Amino acid sequence: MTDRDDRPVFAAVVVAVSRVSAHMVRVVFGDVRSIDGTALAPPQAADEFFGLWVPGPDATPVKRYYTVRERHPEAGEIVVDLLLHGHGPATEWAARAAVGDAVSFDAPRGHYAPPRDATRVVLSGDATALPAIGRILDERARAQEPTPPVTVLVCVDDPADRQRLSVRSDDDVRWCRAEELVAETQRVAAHDPAAYVWFAGEAADMRAVRSTLRRELRIPTHRWMTMGYWRRDSERWAARFDAAGPDLRRAIDEVLATDLDEAVQTDRLEDLLAERGLL
Image (cartoon, rainbow, N blue to C red; front, top):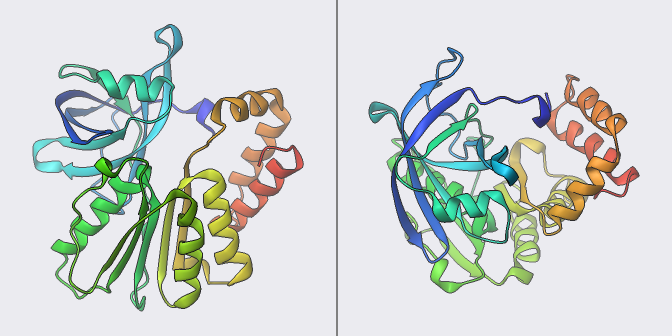
């Protein structure tokens, strides 16, 4: 299924809005209810995300993806941290989100799954990754079983967006410059092949990290996860993607419909996009 086929399956109401940092807004959704009878599954992976429909041009809803920062099943609430960066309908909505706003979204899902034998967990990304990194660390702090130490590598444009994280004395937290993030992630991953590496951020940065992990270091795919949360040239890219026409969309659907390993599917999708100059 592609985004153009998606429909929201849950509705909620904004019940609280607060500031986490200079450019991060925390929005609490309450009164979560099903639109089509689908039950909201219990919390899954700690990097859960969902598609949130926000008002777009001419008030037409558009779908944007956000991380679930916290889940409060007993209160029927979902907490989302929204970064105010760049332009576009999602940033504009986040800046004016208010109590009483109606929202809709699809089912949360995630990928974070460090193997039991991981010697260290590497959590890396830019400011858009902070909600997921924060939740991963919070859940680790509540874990009953022993967990490996963590290396956190994060870049933020404004030092005022640094956050207090749930870390231990054996963890390593580094606030990097943007131009250092990819190289530092690659260096840390190469130093410890038995670590679990989780990276999220800008799409081109993600591809650079993924290429190192998969093609250069040949680290098994169960020991890493990379996600592109945004694009520097998103408007231009979207226009070029739309111009590619239905043949590209059908080709993408065919890849996603296969039973191939997710990493292999991603390889195939990157090949498709590269053929059309969309990487």
